[in-house]
Image (cartoon, rainbow, N blue to C red; front, side):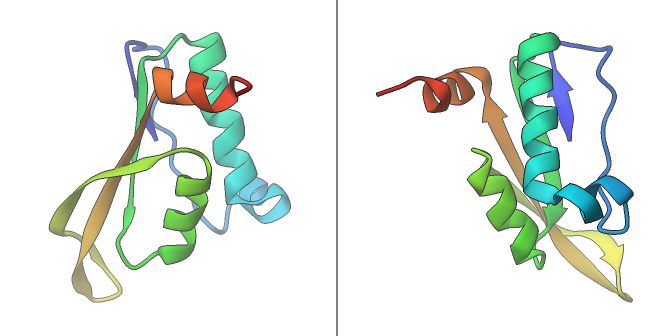
Length: 102
């Protein structure tokens, strides 16, 4: 996950083996980091990439408000073959709209 308009927020890398992901789940971890980036770091946008074959992660990211922005074809070598990566992002105004009562 990377952010723009805030050089002090470094990229964050998730792994299913990470303790936080195992204990609280990917969706909760992404929600916490997303809210922190917008609330405390005043970011304009957040983007992430995930393997196109990782449908569980894609569902979790969509549930957190991220939308698919593109596909990097055969971008990552994993499991002995080239795989596509999906680029996803969320803008501050999308995050704010989702949080406001309708």
